[in-house]
Amino acid sequence: MPQLTGKEVETKLGRLVLSEEAIATIAGAAATECYGVVGMAGRRMVDGIAELLGKENLSKGVSVSIEGDLVYIDLSVVVGYGVKISEVARMVVEKVRYTVENVTGLKVKKVTVNVQGIRLQGSSGS
Picture 1: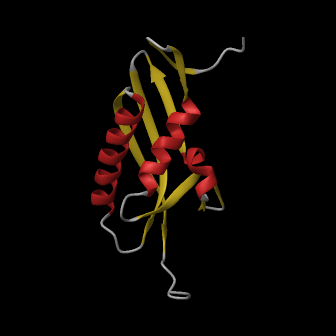
Picture 2: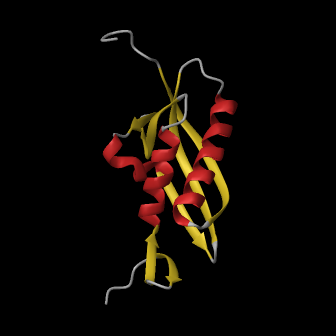
Picture 3: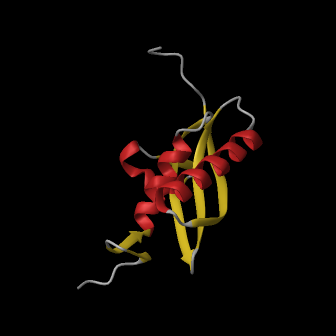
């Protein structure tokens, strides 16, 4: 049987392994639901510009580490121009912590929000 990385949970129905990638996808989806967040950013910057990731790459802007029963999450996001960054970051931390804890049953010890860029909202098309 292949060895999986992540958090193993025993239930009366059997063994459940939550991968770090699965937790990262949950966290990325929760973050992008927050007002002011345009999307997730790639962790690599090219020429000082953060890459805005599409919906299919939500976990790419998220780093998850599990230590015992505690989960640590680092998010790289792009926010919209004109939002109060500190307020958006606070909402992201609360939403990600709540969502990950409720979906997985794991305890989130720390959520770090890294604002990698600011996106100007274009007026074309809307």
